[in-house]
Structures are given as structure tokens and as C-alpha cells.
Image (cartoon, rainbow, N blue to C red; front, side, top):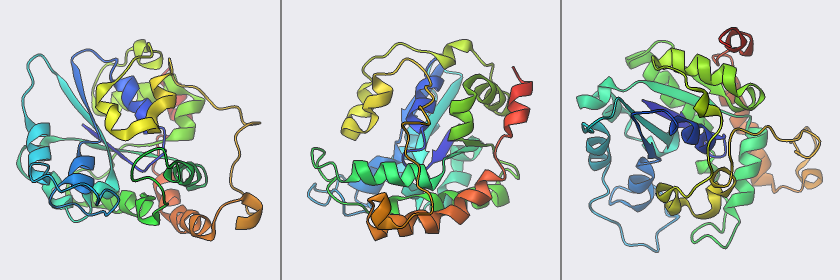
Length: 265
């Protein structure tokens, strides 16, 4: 099972929820290693590191394909843009047995959040915003690929729906992937997740959380129709939001409908 997403779409909270399922092994953005650090890397963000010949796309696929003792579900959360030029690998070998699902969030929220994190100079390599990492174009392209080659109707979850109704959405998601929903998926104990260390402080909010938490709408700034200067965002960010909206909107039409999710409760 793979959950494909774009940055800052509440995906790590989703992953943390899946960790509460018994007999479930989770992987945290495994293709990050090949995209940023491997010999086949497709980004210069970590160019100050020598490429690691072992972190190939094939090696990541083999890791996901393995049989794990006592494990009934292998779940991986990953960014669709990591798979640029590698979509075909998802429909060959044992990876073809994986079900592919998608998590989206309005680019007005996700890209703004990603921009703010991208200019956090405390994190090595993250001192600039790259619109190619916004992720929505690749997310839709991957959705279309999977729909054409494997599953006509992949599951799509919208992050705002998830935060508004965690139980309903997670119940509907579990039903869709054929696993039993457990109420433990809604709340968890905050703890260190070693696999997240590679991402630095990106996941601090989830690491310190105890469940899904809907943000206070009075404290959450949302990009509207104001210009870049009024929003305090550079033109490159506002343009990335605008260009990403059509991709998001197409996926949004395919999401689990909130009213259907409420029926699962």
C-alpha cells in the first residue's frame, strides 16, 4: 500500500495514524533517498553530499517488495515527485501488487507551508524554495498513470476533510484498502520516530502530537485572491500556487466525499 502526496499535505500525520494498526510495517518516504541522495538523484538540493551508489530506485523497490515476518500490511508514504521518470517501475515485479492511494491538500495551504519550511536555514540544504518540489503536477500525472495502467479509481483523500472528520475519513480509507479500522488510529502517544530524523524539524508538529488536530480557522491564514505583496509571499510562490490549483482541483473531484465518510461512522 502506498500513499502518494505532495509536501505539507498532513501526510506524516496520516502515516502516524497507520502506525497504530497491528501487523503493519510503515515506510517513511523511502524514495526520498534515491531522489535526493542516490546516484540517480534528480535534485541538486543536497549536491553538497556525494551520491550514494546504494540508494537506487531498484534498491528501494526491493526493500518494499520484501516479505516481513508477522506483517500483514506494508504501508509507504511518499512524494509523487520523487518518482519522476520512474512511474513504470510501479507496475512491474512485485511492486505491481501494491495498491496506490493519494492524499491532497489545497496548494494555497500546502505550498505556503512548504515555502516557509524551505527557507528554514537551520536545516541543511533548505535555504531556498524550489517550485519543482511543489508536487501537484506530478501527483496528478501519477494518479492518471495508475488509473490507466492499474486501478481505474484510486482512492483520494483531501487533508481538510481528514482533519474535519478523522474517524469518518479513516474508516472509509480502511474500507477502501481492505483493512479493519481501529480507533487507535485516531489517537497515539507522542514519541520519537527514528525514520523521521532524515527530515530534520519538518515533522516536529506530528512528532509531538497525540492525534489528528484541526487547526483553529481563526489562527490559520489561508491564501486568498490578494496579491503577493499583501500576502507577504514572493511571486515565485504565488505563481506556484496558481499553477498547482488546476491539478489539485481535478484530484479534489475524485476524493472520498465527506458525506460518504460520515456514513461509515
